[in-house]
Length: 393
Figure 1: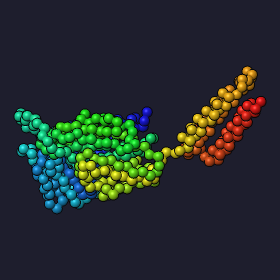
Figure 2: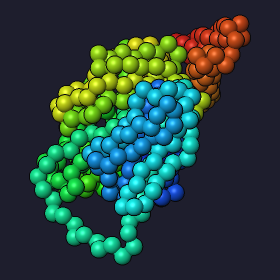
Figure 3: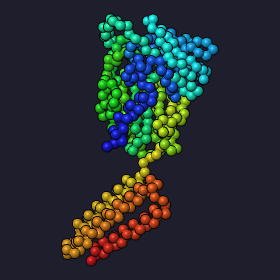
Figure 4: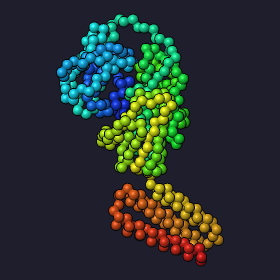
């Protein structure tokens, strides 16, 4: 089974948790007021999201106070319900406060981190007995890929495993209907599949991912993955986007001397997650139809020798089969010895192939490898000599 298919259940949850995908939080009220340090935010930044009852019921245009430091700072929430505070002094102890429908919401006091920033929720309670509004009909509109959209690249057995976490964001108060969002995967992509937790509005067919509306207010989460094989240490990856994206955010597993560049990167840095080294890169907004383009160098390209050994073995077996088929009938003893020689030859080839694999992995030292290889090659020469002698006899 492909390594990507075995891993689908894990990255979907691990990646979503590590990047605080708010659309998957099971109980918003329990998360209210808890500061969540985030390494991929600018130093000295704090984002406070204000919602009423549910994550999709954001409270836009609402003042939020950040108390602490030299003086309180007040910022209004944007269309996504977020109040964004920037350029705070690291080490300052602050807390976020706001009042929604007479209910005072206050966060835990926390220290502005010296690396990265902080995100949090302030969740107001829906009034008891509040009249449930009739759902609004879907209207023509547009959606964008929101701030939680990320692309994660990991090295797998068969190439790059590409995990796409798309936050399709509708900033309107009513559902919007758009043309289906069609994302054609790069040429060569294989084994595309949806990941657990993805919206049922997404469908994967071959090398195409299609997401149909209408899109409810707030975020719609689409998660899918595929493998992108590579045969060389250098390659260019390109993926076009069906709608505009607010910010480019990419996380790439770093192996050996691998390096990634893109003219779209405004900043990038090395980070560690789960004991693995990653390159975290960010860039400005991209328009619908723009390609996300990355250039990889130093990739651990698959070794060609296993394929060459397998091909060589196949050719030898075919040649041996043709040689045996062309021989005149022999006596019983000669045929039995020929069978023994073929079995011995195949056994020696398997041992030689296994030795080459161990040497490639560094599992055998050079002296032992050289001596054992000389021994196996000598044994093969003796087997072929006897096979030739039988053919002449």
